[in-house]
Image (spheres, rainbow, N blue to C red):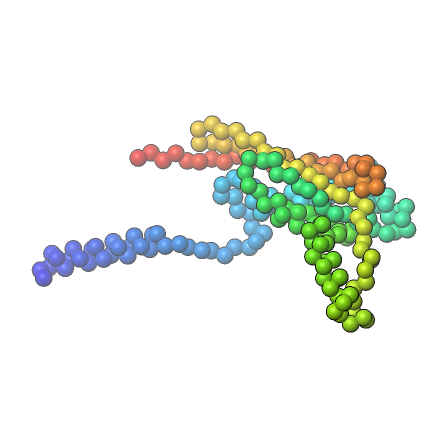
Length: 207
């Protein structure tokens, strides 16, 4: 094998290593709280920030008298109970609404001003377990029947979206509308709105 052949093989081997290294998947762990926007679409940061903003907004009443404070004043200091109902995704993209619902529940519980009860799907599983305990669990450890907390208010909402595009520039607009409904009277106790606007720039590559 002459020197030229050996040099060519070495160069090809080096090139193969560089190409394979350049194509390797790289994973970097970051804080879950770190804001990262790659595509401009709805993401975990939007879900968390909107949930926190909407819950804070829902407690802002005239002269500091929110619906929660008014309820406690008329019910001996007892906190109101909220259930998060249907959040409709009316946007043009897939949004994991379940994650948004969990963020709303977390924000309400974190406020310390309300209690939050399980959804109808969650209650069905809990009721099955409670019914099973009546037959199979020791009497002094059974969860009693008929002791569920009823909700006084239901939170409902919509997520809407408008897109505008020109060349490699795109504007994504989200609008989240939420309503808190008194379950006994159907009265709308509170309505709120939160908006997100993102400008997404996509570079054009020239060959």
